[in-house]
Image 1 (cartoon, helix red, strand yellow):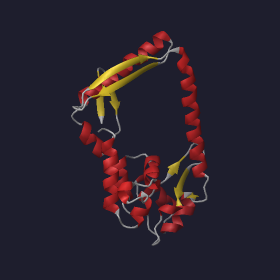
Image 2 (cartoon, rainbow, N blue to C red):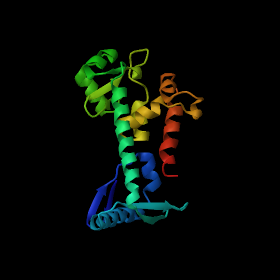
Image 3 (cartoon, helix red, strand yellow):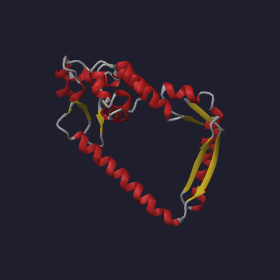
Image 4 (spheres, one colour):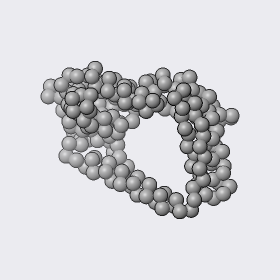
Length: 208
């Protein structure tokens, strides 16, 4: 979705489900982009971090709540930086797992060449995960006992968005709506519509 604020046009990626919730709120999004531009200018002028927050009312109106960050907040900035690094290390650990395969090793599991695997990844027919240095890896567990890619994966991407790590976390999470099953196990059991329903609720809930 393209949002314009003055002479600036920003591309905002959203899922179909989320788009339906905010399609009538372009004016609010434009205000938020303008607010960001003002905050960036103030931060540059003062040499200090500047935080802007928005309070959203039940009717969808967004009100800016500006806050200047004191010098002591540098400790928080450091903590956030360390948390980001921990996240990167966690991703690296996941990609080093024995169940993470290259396209060349993954292909034979579904009867495809590594070129076809890459095409399927771009079409969201298979899940490929990428880190900082290890290239794209394909989880072995997404192949069914019949030697087929995980059913319903394309529609799951449509519901959750194009970020593979978001889909990965959703698949590996146990959901009460699925009786405590992971979304991965539910899909392998053929519960495609149930899984997609949970995904749609999760996606729309981000703007509720």
